[in-house]
Image (tube, rainbow, N blue to C red; front, side):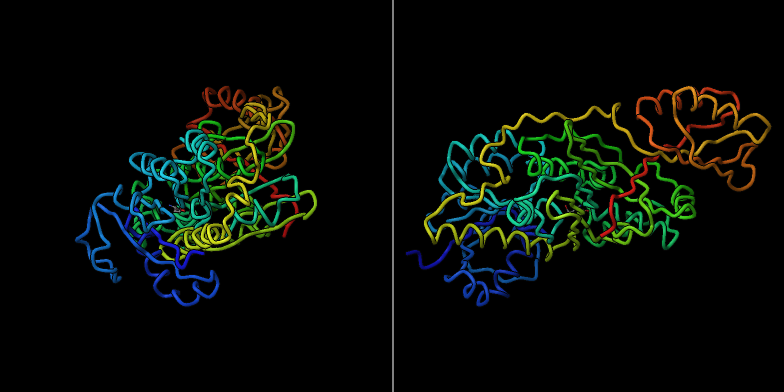
Amino acid sequence: MRSRIGIGLIGFGTIGTGVVKLLSQHQGLLRERVGVPLELVKIADIDLERPRGVKVKPGSLTREATEVIHHPGVDVVIELIGGIEPAKGFILEALRAGKPVVTANKALLAQEGREILDVLRETNQELGFEASVGGGIPIVKAMREGLVANSYKYIYGIINGTSNYVLTMMETEGLSFQEALTDAQAKGYAEADPALDISGVDAAHKAAILATMAFGRYFSLSEVYVEGLEGMDLRDIRYAKELGYRVKLLALIKGGPQVEIRVHPTLIPSDHSLAKVDGVFNAIYIEGDAVGPTMFYGQGAGEMPTASAVVADIVDIARDLLKGVRRRVPPFSYENLERDVQVKPMDEVVTRYYMRFTAQDRPGVLSKISGILAKRGISIESVIQKGRRERGTVPVVMMTHEAKERDVRLALSEIDNLEVIGGKTVLLRVEDGRRRC
Ligand code: HSE
């Protein structure tokens, strides 16, 4: 019987510091819950000078990740450096050295996950990645255990705290996009490269992981349709609000003969539970065929919430190690990730749309626009002309009934070429969000 579980940490940044704090603050509590102490044995980082406000055991710090991986007292390796390399190399080395791994690295899982999965199979090792999606929200555990009896119909996620914070601050404080982003960065929510948050790619990484767990085959980032917040105009947030909607950067994953996996700014009804998720908070709405609608809500980023998820994975692995079992629960919920599931091409997606045309304010313009839409079978639900003339043009906002993406794109390319149209049409997708929780 082991008398302790030794932990090795690679990456002593924001989340790593949170993990060190949590393991120390809750040393007694975790010991009672696990049965033996969780002992931080070795920590690697390239920067050992920066003050972090936490005490570590003398001699436990190193600049060499391999010292952590191969330390005989380390039973579990935690990778918190992020990015592809050298993180991938360290994870594979640890797995091959016979050590289970915990990571928060969504980019790596969504981009290079196949290789990680191959090595996991080859080594029959464990991988914890709770912290990779939704920060402190235990969504990974919920999907692979609590909801395992369900076939998933819909998963809607607000899974990027930075972009949700930016949208919230734009809407509620009237901040510019840049002001809101700078504030999010100052608070430590944004990725080192905030472009990943704003472009939707961070949410897409997480969507690929959720889809893999939902549908039982590996989905990579390249299969996720992504649009970010670049160019998001405060006017569209305001018009959407007047129409009874809020704009959220939503990850949408839908089951069916072909699955949909997409991330884009989306209008959702203001009275939907997801619309009330503000600031850095994340929420994942899941509808299973047996359970019906469920929603998981919490802090999707930040030092301590993310550390909470990392330590939860450490505890799961520690319990398996103590009981002498491995992979009691497969990391992605399926014993084999080999189901034959195809992704619906974006052109085939059917949804409702918000369109803002920059149109000349003169007779016949609306009929030209609606004529082109009608020719493509796109039916208009409502139309409003907003505000005053801006350099001879007016914003015309339309909501459509369900239409096919390909038809909408073809119609808009024709409309944007009309001489009465004074700028590129803004196109946002609308989602009813299914039943309200
Ligand atoms: N940058 C991420 C976010 C952090 O804003 O949600 C958690 O992945």
